[in-house]
Amino acid sequence: MSVKQLSKKTVLYSTHLSLNARMDTVGGFIMPIQYSGIIKEHNATRQSVSIFDTCHLGKIRISGENACTDLEHILTCSVDSLAVGQCRYGFMCNEQGGMIDDLIIYRIAENKFILVVNSSEQHTDFEWVRKHSSENTAITDISDITAKIDLQGPKSPPVLNKLLDESITDLPYFHFTYRYYRNTKLLISRTGFTGELGFEIFCPHDIARSLWKACVNSGVTPAGLECRNTLRLEMGYPLYGHEIDDTHNPVETGYSCAIARDKTFIGSDHIPDEIVVPTKLVGITLSGIQTARHGDGILSEDKKNIGTVTSGSYSPSLEKAIALGYVRKEFSRPGTEIIISAHKKKMKASVSELPFYKEASGRKKLSDFL
Image (tube, helix red, strand yellow):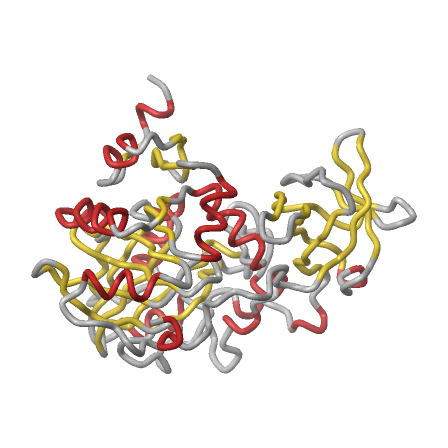
């Protein structure tokens, strides 16, 4: 039996086939990699609006009177300070401070939360939360009954509002609300993995195909996971299995803002202050058109090994090759000249400030795009 036969399918699988999407296995699911082409889909997201199937991501519901306390102990970010209707980026770490996963936590009610986690770590995350939660905390994997569709791009607000019973006119970044589509309640968050203004839409499986079709019929461009990768790379966002793994801690990624230093959580004793961290995740701009790849070596100008590339691609927005990689801290200053070692090839490059792409609309006022 092939890997694809063993892989899961999202509720939108047949929809992707009808659109002639190129499919491949990602995180245990057969997912659309691209439809009309990476650059076209990438540019549609930056300049207009696109739609992504992200049903494969795990969703874990945690509830009970001790849910907040339990999650404070499990996650790096502050949980108690979250307002109902707010979400936050954070990490789940092991006892040594290594990253088990990165995630977004949603506060649904005073004692009810949802974690959105990476598909490949869904089972691991669920068991970790269960193991470290109180006996009376209810933990439910709702992944198989909850679809998730991402509508991303500066023209996403008017498209979404035409489909809803009531328009969304003012939703702050990293907050969520509820609206109805065809008498079905949706959870809509102002989040995403592209850097652009957009929404992540959670809905029952039986409405997902209709919602997807309505968006496409409104002129939205279907986009695959390859362009999602180039979009997040231009923003310097870390990806599980590349920048996120249990051999690095959250400080090394540059996301100290996702660590609450005023509490104790699993692994907190082993997470160093930013000033003493030995390695850092940096942006890299290559001199030529050839791209760096995951696992390529990073050398200093005098050919000493100083780090490893974690992700690399051609940037459609900037029209140059870019990458992310971990380097020794003393080589992390923007402008530092480095060399990418790819097998027998050596490519000139330099450390770059993140994000690479600085014109994204993600944090701008929603009302400006209506």
